[in-house]
Length: 109
Image 1 (cartoon, one colour):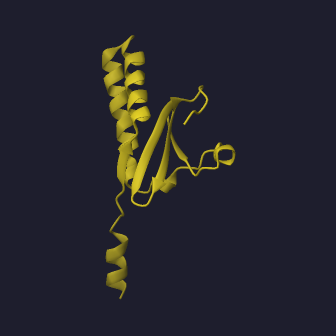
Image 2: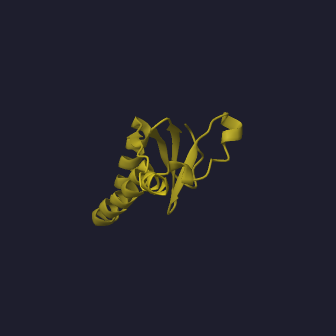
């Protein structure tokens, strides 16, 4: 019995991470904004940001619900990476990345 319990602990549920078109566009804008000063920094930053985003394939609920949920009537969460917010929603075994926005900008879904 204990062996069965321990075996189940080591199995981590995997979620499929999907980027909405808005999120893909956001990534592209982030890249071009940084690349205006340094293409190398832009590539590195976007790769690091994507790594964080795709880490949501395990335990996506580890990040907090966004305060705007009360206003929108939603259950969105966000991952903060440096000055950017990755706003996403978990549905069944999928994570939907909705927007990637600079922290100084208002959320528009």
